[in-house]
Image 1 (cartoon, rainbow, N blue to C red):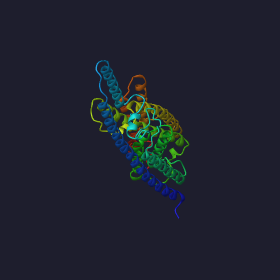
Image 2: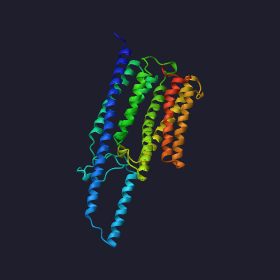
Image 3: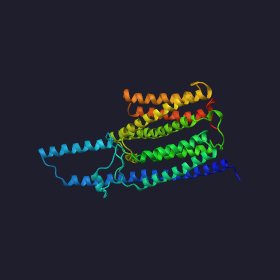
Image 4: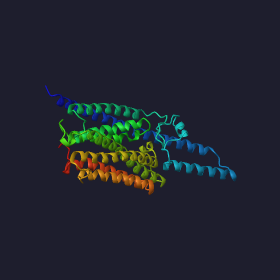
Length: 374
C-alpha cells in the first residue's frame, strides 16, 4: 500500500487533469457565446437597417421649414449613431430597444452589461453554461489543491508546480467572485484560457512529487507572504486581460469612426475602452496594495530566515521592479493624465514582469529564492 502522501498526490494530479478538461469545455462555451452573440447582433443590425430604410422611403420630405427640421433631426440621429459606434463613455455598445424589437425579441438579443458591467435582462445560454462549467472546474480544481496540501502536510505552494496550480485556481476563483457583482463573462475565454495554460505548464514542465520544504520555507510567513502574492497576481491577471481587450477595443472604435468595416463583431459584447480602463485601474489599485504587503512581509521573512531585510537577491529585485512598474502606472494615470493606450500598455508591462519573476527568475537565476523544485 502506498503512503498517504503519495496517495493524496496521485488524487491531486487526477483532480488537476479533470479540472483542466472541464476548463477546456468551459473555454469552448465562452468562445461559442462570443461567436454566436456576434452573429446575432449582426443579424439584428441588418434587420434594423432594412426597417430604417423602408421607413425613410415611406416618409415624404416637406419643403421649407419641414425639410430643415427633418434634416436637423436626421443629422442628430447620425451623430447619436456615431456616438454609439465609437463606444459612449460609461457604457458598453448594445443594440437599442427599437433594434431589439425589430429582431422580435424585446429582451434585447445579444445584450451584455452596460459600462458599469451590471447584468442586464438578456439570456445567453452558452455564457450561462460556460459559467456553470467554470464553477464545476473550480470545485474540482479546489479538490486537487486540497488533496495536494493533505499529501504534503502543509500549504501547497512550496515549489513551481504548486505555485502554478494554486495560482490558476485563485485566478479562476477571483473571476467567479467578481462575476457575482459584475458581468465579466466576456473575460471568460481569457481567464479560463490562461488557467488552462498554467495547469498544462505545471503538469508538463514543472511537475514535482510531494515532498518536504527546505528549512527557509518552514515558517508561518510562507502562508502570509505567498498567499497575498498569489491573490495579487490573480488580480493582475484580470487587469492584464482587460488591458489587452482595451487595446483591441480602442483600435476597433477608431476604425469604425474612420468609416472602416467592423471586422471584430464579437467585441460588441465587450464594454467600451474607457469602461475597461476604469475598472482595470480600480482592480490594479487593490492588487498594488496587496503587492506592497507582499514586499513588506517578504522583507520581514527574510530577516527572520537570513538575518537581513534586503539582500539584492534576484527574486527580491524583481519583486521590487514589479512594485515600481505598477506604482508608476497608478501615479501616471492619476496625476499625469496617462490614459487610454499608454495606461493599458503600462498595465501589460507590469503583468509581463510578474510572469518573468514567476517563471524565468525562479527557474534560471540562482539565489536564496531558488525554490522551483526542479
